[in-house]
Image (tube, rainbow, N blue to C red):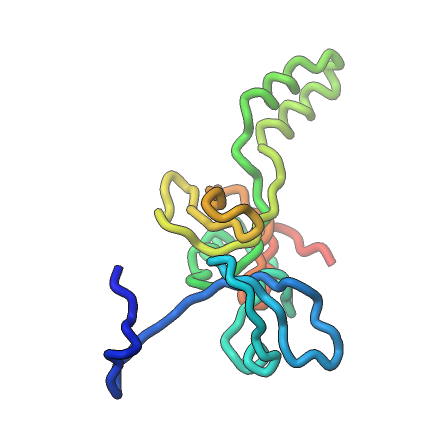
Length: 177
């Protein structure tokens, strides 16, 4: 990939940049800047006015909640674009968890434990879309809370319970207030 050479820029040239940031410390009343670290692990400060007036999105903040079905929440996930998000879903079940649940001696609790194990473990992930797109109902994402180089994850679109994206929390099923 060829990067922009600033020395060769001319009037009318078009360029873009997409950077993901993680806030390093709470913003206090009166602060003029927010301390962040970007996806390349560079620390910097961004003016609060740039954050407030710019086109920033949060994976954590939302102003409304919408009740959606499984198809709609999967569509919302596919439409996040370059924005950050939080998604809560079920991880792929592990064979060991299912076998352990099936070995439960109490028949009454065994059924519930097997059912829970077959669903997979709950997982909440904050990140952005990654390379690879959608394959077999799973979408590649970059986990912004994981170490760089070990942060590519798969989200099963069929198991999403909620998604926070662009100021809205989409909840699959009944909205819990």
